[in-house]
Length: 399
Image (cartoon, rainbow, N blue to C red; front, top):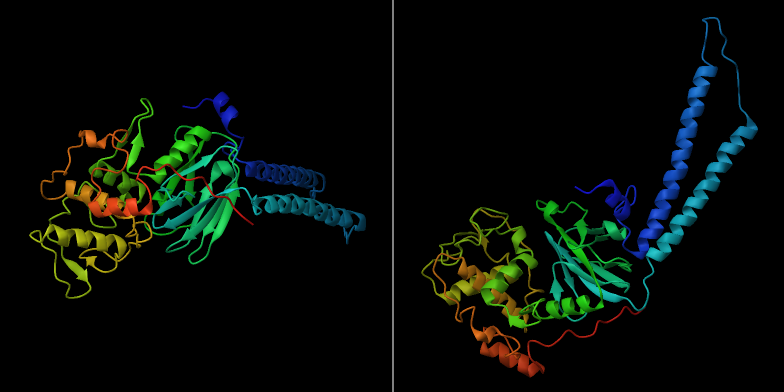
């Protein structure tokens, strides 16, 4: 358990550690308001107790004095609070201007909120389910919601703002402290439905080198680098599918152990008879149907989830079409998820390439993932490069 000395070094008395430029203004305003109101609370209580003792009725025959008003006292208790409120306004307005005016050289990250996850898209086109930022570099978060009202709250940065459907809001900050190993917590603070309590993530504040490595990783989710050896490898599709299952928020609604969630479990989903409740009259999907039919069904369920509703479930899933577009490399990410569903399906599945194959050595074979389809490889070559290209330089906020 954290001892008092450690707590005193990492946290303020009431609040989490100060980890951004905004935290100083917020904490200063908090401490001033708390100190002033606390002082007057104690003053009023003490004076009230003194008055109760001094002016209490001592005998039944004591007469109540007829006091109408006291002009000097009334002026004092009117003017002093007005002056204090003006000071509060000045402190708050100064902090608000700083809070709402991002610098022009800030890195822009697009944040999408949907039931029940956050997705962060970086200037290099990569996405992740946790927020990576670089220490001492300004960051602007452009906030969007695809369904209902959400809110993004980072306690250590003292920043919070709503994600409003069909509108773009933004917040900005400069991270001033490297994050702990587990990152700084990030929450949704607007009740957004059944699994609202599971809509949370973390912020990783990294130094320049680690941030560059993180950006290269999110730009190319098919590849990872061993931090100890420095060697790169292509991630097998079964493993990548499980990784995307967690990163894309599928884990919020779909279990992989057979238990019922908000949506159907993925355990034994592949090649198991499926009955549909909507649209009425939709023919069931049979275990004996072809792989192509099953792949088409899962693809449709991800891109257009309202097209067919499984019996026993309601139409709650948002569309992931923007995250799994038909262009490279998003199409292959969806293929990886389908491959993972196959691997935990109702039939034995053997990946086309053994996971220990040297074809997964990305240093020896840097051009493309061994499980990419030929069509996908052609699309990458037509786009002018290999699938392992490094992340592009971040763009900045222009005002």
